Image (cartoon, rainbow, N blue to C red; front, side, top):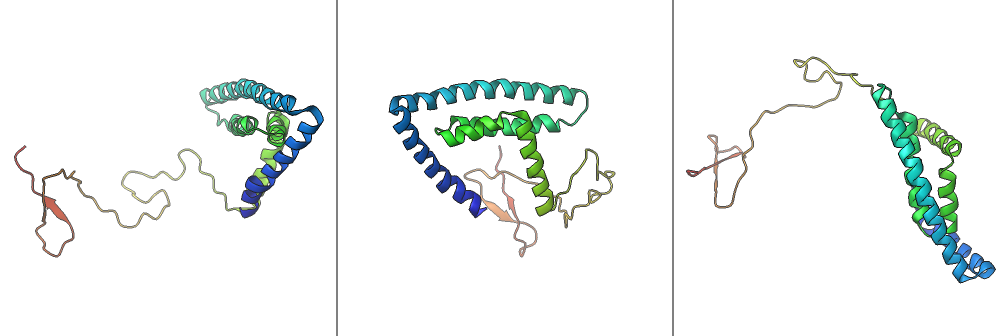
Length: 179
């Protein structure tokens, strides 16, 4: 995690500054700034177009009672692409445009999923899995400990709490005046 933060907050800005300097010396300051704005506009257009496409695919799969895994993966990468393309810089723009290529983002998603499976304990729940009858409070498999049923009362300014019937109890009862 530290390596990722170091890359994001130190390496990427240094690469962006160096790229700005190189591009500025090659094509000039005006064209460098223009190209940054142009990539942001083109990127926003492509992100919007592909985002709506992924949203429509997810909606269609949901209506067919299918789990929209692939459109969600595309949507996550399209969102990341949008963030990268709106960040000023040539390095972030290049990565953002790569995330707009569907085969590339599926390849990256497969690599990320393989890494997650290899390095983390992944458990998947399916709809309806682990649900028991209402009379089985712990049928879902989770350890919920002791369940205490109680009642909550909102205390307003001017009301004073009083002790319950047991003086050693930490709980208090609210004295309600005639309302």
